[in-house]
Amino acid sequence: MKKGLQSLGFSFESDTLTHYGGLFLIQRFCHKLNFRRRLQRALRSAPAGLDFDPVDLVCMILFFLIAGVQRINKTDKLQYDGFFHSLLGLDSLPDETTLRRFLKRLSPAAIRELVRLHDQIRSDLFSRPHIRTSLEFHLDSVVLTLYGKQQGARLGYNPKAKGRRSYHPILCFESHGQEFWHGSLRPGDAGSNTGARFIVKRILAKVPSTIPSSRIRFLMDAGFFSSYVMDDLEQAGCGYTIVCRTYAAYLRLAEKAGFKNLHFGWGVAEFLHQPQKWKRERRFVVIRRPLPVDSEEVAQLTLFKDKQYSYSVLVTNLATNPWRVWTDYVDRSNIERSIRELLNDLALGKIPTETWTANVAFFQMLLFAYNLVHWFKRFTLPDEALGKTIETLRHQLIGIPGQLICRSGKNVLVLPSNFPRQKEFLAVARKL
Image (cartoon, rainbow, N blue to C red; front, side, top):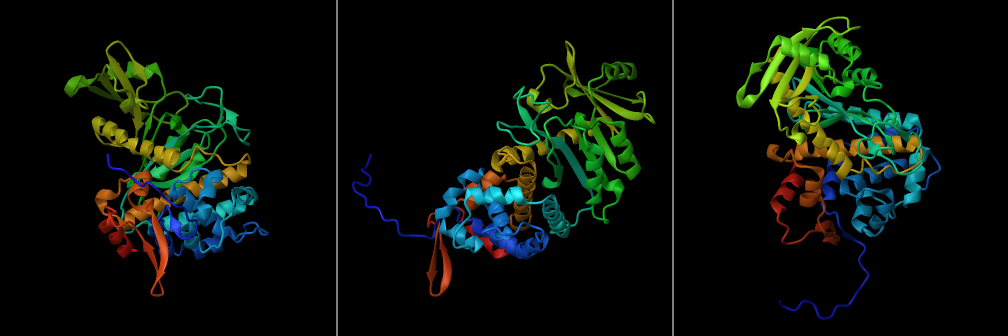
């Protein structure tokens, strides 16, 4: 092995170095959205008397989440990133105490205005760059285990950390590119279907008038198995497929209806049934597959097992054939990837304060950051790159070492000469 450096001096002189040279692309995209001015209008009810403008504080939180700084107490590393200062137009950055104080002082009205701005931008971009004629909503809930004394932290369903307090947010994504649509942070003891009817109502209220209700579908797990939810969706004219809760009676009805054999030992049955207290009978589809079961693939659907088969039961108002009902629902696994991104790449599980309202504000900003990256991909990257995760984008385009200099009176961001994605970076910059 050749010898490396034998002697090296140190000089702490530059204040324009950065870990995040590619974050400029996100900043330019926000500029094209007229984001800052719209945020100023939205935050008129934000707290006064702070050392920093509330708009700057929100922008900083969004940018450090996108950059991959997952905890507020880790933002001190940005204090010596001169390029990050320049992106925000600030001479100095707020410390973690200032950020937490800001989150705690945000009123529910200010948080609602921030959510309203999020919805407005999504509505503005909805038909771009391609017109959409249908919508498919995937709903799921996630358990966030907590280790402090946060408000709203309660004992509830927590399979990975039994006996630990948690939050239990519910999330909705639209399947075309997994764009976030609606979400709500809830205490840990909230059931999966708690507030489900209200959430469905809020989701439908955000649908553009150009999309007929007959072109809207909902795919939900067993937590939303409720006749009231089905009544609401049917009254709205929407399609749905929902996983049934564990009732052995459904298996007996499937056996009575008879299974149609498919390839590789699989089978499918369907029947009409009206459980007690339901207003009408509905269509049930049962999928039978031979053991052993791939636990990762069907963890959300496997409800019954016997010595030979496992069974999954769905209720639907769609007219498609039973096998298609199943395969369409299995494609819903994309929502699990989106939730993993929120958990692993965007700090969904890193609750920043002990105050409920502050944590709701952070939760909504985190979802806003997720969609900013989604829209950035949709408008600047080729179609084959739309599936890239946020972490992949950081690795390929955002987390680039660089230096901001002034050359011939112009600002120049100097990036590595051997950067392997120069063409992709410049193509995105040209689109912006």
